[in-house]
Length: 99
Image 1 (cartoon, rainbow, N blue to C red):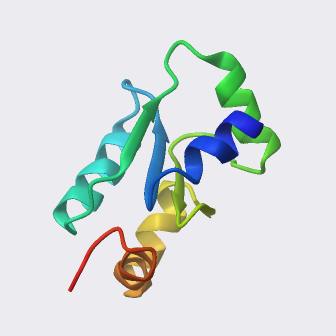
Image 2 (tube, rainbow, N blue to C red):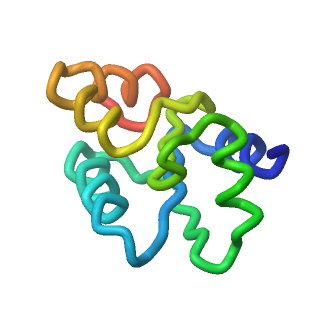
């Protein structure tokens, strides 16, 4: 879990993904569309990392999105934030995007 929190705090926006996950791809595309350049950590061959995400409360474990070092949720949560307009504000506050 320490490795997850360490990686999540190194950049303003961090996404833990699997290459075979279509929702992971969609969330990455959304961040790029908003102008963010998140750190992407693929956990395809790292079962320990996936279990660490679950122990932190990430359910489903992937995608796991962190903004400003804080867990904001999975794909459903991020899409909800985007729809209600708060995702962009969170990214601005974390300095993941500038306006």
